[in-house]
Amino acid sequence: MVFCNTAFAQNPILKGLGVSDPHIRVFQDTIYLYSGHDANPKDKTWVMKDWRVFSSTDLRNWSLRNTISPKENYMDDNSTDCWASDAATRNGKYYFYFSDRKRGVGVMSASSPIGSFKDVLGQPLVAPMHDPTILIDDDLEKTPYLIYGDKEGGGFHITKLNDDMISISETPKPIQINGKAWENAPHWMDKNYIFKYKDWYYLSWGRDYAISKNIYGPYQCVGSVGNGYNLSEYAHGSFFKWKGQFYHIWCYYINKGFKFRESIITYCHIDDNGKIVTDTNFLDQHFSNGVGQYQASWKKIEAEWFYEISEGIQKTGSKDEGFILTNIKDENYVKFANVNFDRVYKNIILRIKLYGQKGKIKIRTGSANGTCIGKINLNPKNRNEQFQELKLKIKDTKGLEDIFIFFEGNKNDALSLDWIKFE
Image (cartoon, rainbow, N blue to C red; front, side):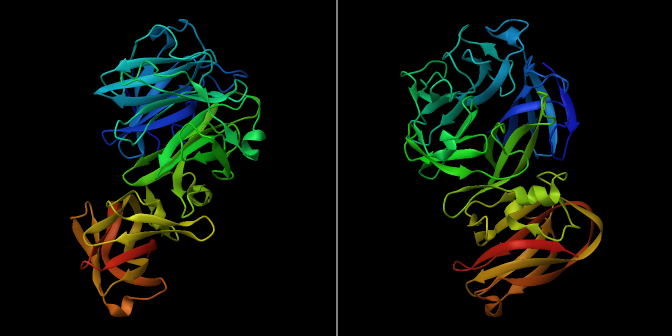
């Protein structure tokens, strides 16, 4: 086991380390990144000698917690075929699912999200094919599923796992995907990811995705999750939710012809029509800054880029019209962590809409109940069908601060937030 504390608060994350096939899982409020490891920037074929587990509690500082070697499972001791992986938890144990190139998917278990992981079967769980994703459904039984495979091998396949997470309870079935995006996908297309939102299952590959109300399908193609930033057929990635925010992480090849990748994280949204919107606008403006931190000098900080929100607050909107936060009620907060005040700032401007009769906005630092550095009382004059900009004077603020937009109101009072900025 290897331990290493390294801060990489920018995109790409963990720069120069060959982080590929990134799968992020959140266990006990900690973010765990299970990744492949491209060995050398000069490799012209895939040389992947191990998998790695990183963790973070703030999306800024990542620690290498473990290196998983093929020596520890049924694969050859000197294998360079450590392809994509995923992880899951059940009954107090943690499970690591791995690809042996395209030969099969194996499984290892541990008592901790970081291992040490032990091979529990000594052979593949399913074979052939590769690139596993685990989905724990939200039904009463919390049914676990394994999705894996590629287009060339008959498409993605799905099978229900038993409660032990190391055996399957049914014969794997191919998933039918209808639509041009899948028809036009390269014959080798692999690396699925699947998640559930409301009543819909979202099955993605590369830059495209399809949806179905039945996990077994058929799935109907919707389109691209986003454009730019190497969101192409090679964009192996995953999605994850943390502290109320939704994120997309994916990898890309740095140089054409060389099998060495790095990974990007950005904010992600599900719009009012249920479509995935990977926030490339954030990357356009603040790529090197990365998620989970903000600069007070920015022209504005969009509300949908929040770090954390109170339960019940909703993100609404669309790619074309933009996104806002709504249903901000009494004692709710919106948190922007690690705001860098590079000089003294005296004001904060908020673009808001008030619903109801009155309320109060407080700007706090440190925590939702922390020091109040500015406040404003709202009244019926602030109630408007349109968003309006309010300027609040704040105590001189400099350095790195966690900023909380805290709302107080009566039962029928609520707030919507579009963006904030400092001056």
